[in-house]
Length: 315
View 1 (tube, rainbow, N blue to C red):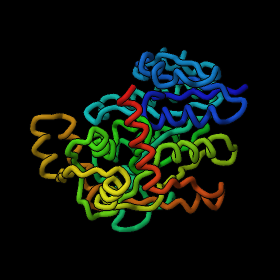
View 2: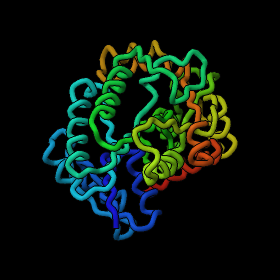
View 3: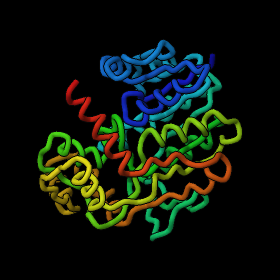
């Protein structure tokens, strides 16, 4: 039985990767995060092929120990924006050290920041990466570290997440208040179509890539089920959930003002271009070489996400 280690297993993508890998035969899954109590609650219903391990990615010895015997290391760690500049490079150095020690395949969960502005173009893996934000430049530097490391790697780029355990996502901010039947907020212009990916779809596509031998030393785009506007999302909530409360809009100027008092909001300001000039990914490479991408329709994915959140609230 081969071993897959999920770093960042308590996050949205980590949680869904654990479930997707356990759907495959002959794979032992090691879920790694700092908070073992949270993981025990998240995974208590799963079968015996999963083990829960405490690991702090900022401490190399902790990550080396957590990754012992790994065939695959999935790097799905996410940290708050204010810590990126200080900590992300250290985390990647430690993850790369573990991959080298174990001769493991490294699977990196990445976002779209390194692409920079799309200028209305659907972005493919061959498009140059020209980040204009501090965080986009950090993501590009991390990718370059991986490419030069000598390990077997693949880097997957995703649009904004939503879905089970996607607690740090923009749509979660909206849906949380809907679940509570309170007035909610939507971040960005309601009329601009943007791309999101349902987390179980993203996890399934990434595992498909990881379990093949001909997908490494490459970047892969994993898009969602097309684009959707905030107004369309609210309409789904109104029609399917009979949600009637007001949804207000959070603008860039509001984020800027909040940034005067909150380090997190201050760091978010430069990323607000993504709600004004959305980056949309092409999945042509995946579909030509691997097959059809999993694409849960937004209506189905949003309702499934709300149902999951309701069960979490009840629990």
